[in-house]
Image (cartoon, rainbow, N blue to C red):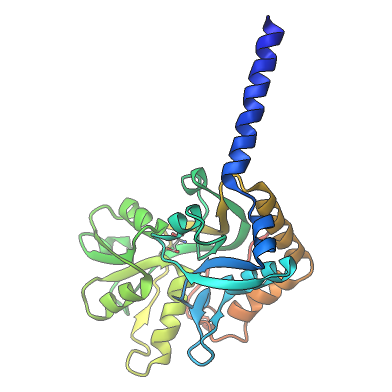
Length: 281
Ligand code: GLU
């Protein structure tokens, strides 16, 4: 009897596993078949994902990882802009195959989607008008901007509960709100804020007026997002990241967007950067 029950349990488990695999689909096979990898990326967050004003091409750190993965698959890439709030639904509804969108991997999100190995690490900070914020105390009771659906939104509510958080579709709108005095700060990953500060620094009208104070409230490891249980694709992407780490491509991409020859404010020595290319784990 016990043996029969054991067999029954085994059969049910196997059927369950097969159904799970069927539900998740096989993106690796699908992408090869259709000849295109549809990637959900940010379109206004240099140096991760933005549109080159001259060429109109998507460019950035996230984009370069997508390009390498597509090349290895032997397929073309189609980029679809995503926001922090809509990226998980876009993936789960199969409107994109992969997310490469400044996305922090955490246990809560990992209940709904799968993540690759970490391919970037940063931490959450604030961008403010110069001299207005020295510590978290200066933010108490104030309005702060961030993006809807981000970890930044959750973290700031925990770190400074007395603030009013204004959540925008994306961070450039938060930066505008700082410029207009509607919020005291915009908060998100330092690596993103550095890109926004870079834009302000390039503009003679705003140059020298903004800063990222040395206040970090979280660690944000980025992972590429894939559908839950899409095992073949997750393995392929992780193997590709390992290959990129070994053959120096990951380092090259890091240097291209954050290295000493870039104009990233990270390298101007004006503030300490916590962002770094991570060993894969
Ligand atoms: N990395 C954080 C997150 O995944 C903030 C950046 C973003 O909103 O994409 O939520």
